Image (cartoon, rainbow, N blue to C red):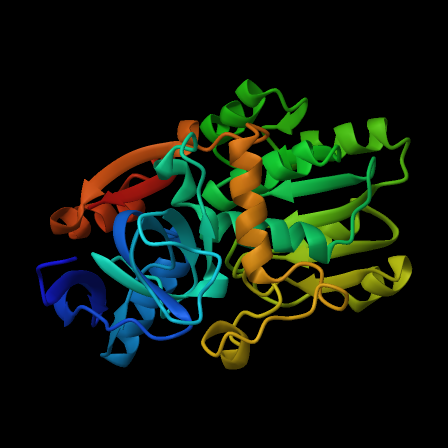
Length: 339
């Protein structure tokens, strides 16, 4: 089935990305063992982990989104077969490693006509979908997406596919151009221009929600309260400093929400590792169902991720991949490891 007993994985060791050797995991009853084809870097999350290991003088494995071929299936797994290609999501099960032991709820079959490189971004796709669901947007409503890194790009495309009116912006004009080339109409090179477009299209009422994919210390939460309508929603997706004006929030009675990863089930051991699913009648969209929905959008060509892939590396070149994230931000977007 597989000849090796150990595998390489990418880890951050006191702030330095490096390869370490781990044993290939043994398949358990509710899990599938996957031979990885591609794994996707999540720049924001992984740089946070790298910086954390530097500060704490610790070691941590990197990555949480991948695609591969199933080589072994647990006894209680019914919907996945050996030989299938699946997309998978969720640390600590998914990482940049040659083999992955993934709880079956966190793996979704990938149709043969879907590009596995695009499927490798399933984790980011699930996160984007869950953020949009947190905003509780309905058909025809409007949303602002601020920060067009790989996550914001996917999020804007999904919102557009859901027939929402999408307004988007990023400090880097090249990232705005990608969405414009995709056909999105209201993409701006500046926040000021985006706000003018929102006022014009919504007749001054404001958008229904703002999805903030940026990070750091800034006044973005306060500024977004000027964009939303009365009782609109602000969903924080990036690692933003959580400070904002109470008077602005009070004036709009704004809802400020956090989007936690890929959906209900994330970090719940009973769901993720013990195979206890959430009933559809009570929890419509779990993290596993969000992964599958991302794959459906790819399969039906409602979104396109391949133009977002800017770099591809082997595992051995992992340090170079993270160096590119740090030093070549303007021409870096989607980054894959190929196995």
